[in-house]
Image 1 (tube, rainbow, N blue to C red):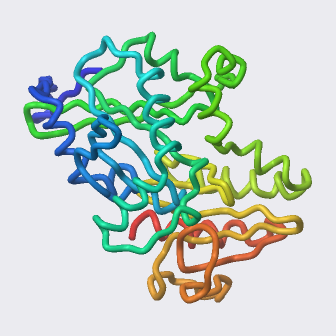
Image 2 (image 1 turned 180 degrees about the horizontal axis):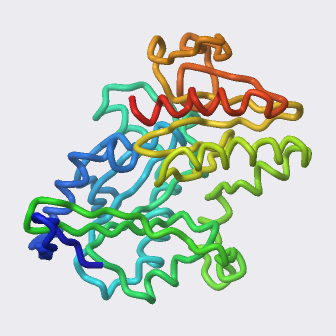
Length: 302
């Protein structure tokens, strides 16, 4: 895709500026991990069992470790390498926890980590069609991110999403003991997982609120987690927890920043809860949908 600058009505093409080294991509991502992916940097160049991991990160929302690898060479099987790293982590959990505690001065235990949410991220200026198709499974713990930089200093970054027709990798996993072992431990959550846990009426109510949030702005993404579903745009706008008889909606605003004249949102900043955000609203109907959207919309402009 070409990018242009509008100079007094005349479009001037902005030319790409290829990365010379993988290290340039790594430095860019590690310096902006939280803004780009919502991750915390644990360690750069982490070596374990004679294998070097470019970036070890932690996802505080999922409570899981993330391995990031940077590639300029297209001729690499990202699936084979991805499952090798996933297997490496699952077989050496204690080493990753020790690295986290030492680097961040924490006291996390292995039981505090949701190992089922572990994943590997590959970052590259581009991926081949074969690489994209090889990772097009709805339940694979491997992500592809493309990054390009341009002569004017702009940078383009996008995650390559699985298609709506993506199938499960589990039938193929039978062909490899490594893939079979990893897929037995890794779980990629979907909206269907949450739908199957509640009655149809509650899921329909969720869909109404989800669609209303998606209509608030372009670029909002649905990100199912283990215990809730996040609606994201540069961070979580809202997290929706589906329960038996209602929804709990956590608005992604800090305490004291939300204008709520009806006092519908409860301050849960000092209470343990699933999802992010300091405000909780419980709903069992859509009668306050429009007003709740006015609250969520505030987060977009915070």
